[in-house]
Length: 79
Image 1 (cartoon, helix red, strand yellow):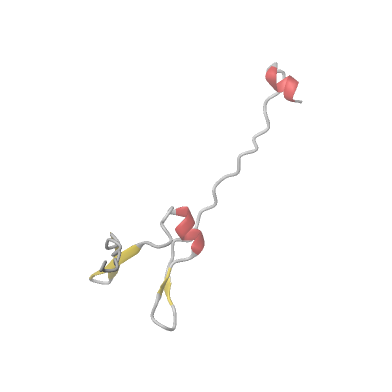
Image 2 (cartoon, rainbow, N blue to C red):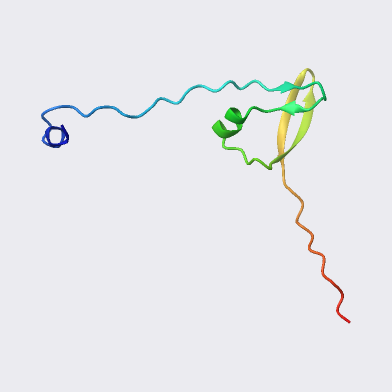
């Protein structure tokens, strides 16, 4: 089969999969936490440790990316 494809005698088989649409709905659980499904995080290529600021505009909510503060390294005092 591969030889026939190389000679353009037959067309190649399409082995690529179509990307499925992911549900872009998020919810609030009983404890009041905003839940973003893992499939949506993967589809949007979000960092799993990302921080967001929530902004309310009328009835809408917006998530704005927030940078993590620099990590503080404590050093021992030398005598």
